Image (tube, rainbow, N blue to C red):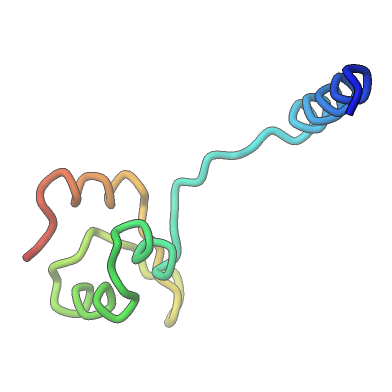
Length: 81
């Protein structure tokens, strides 16, 4: 790649980011939260069922969301044993 093509690519990326800035995520699905915590989905589901999981919100019958701030708080407090 030439310096000119690298500069053109950088300009195109910067322009795209200005038009569509990334939106920080506040909420994770159960699958994403389990990965974030280093747990299996089954383990997280069991912890939710037994009340020793990070705070979450049930948004539909089968969809639960975890706020990243709550996951971090849970980790900082040592999690549930």
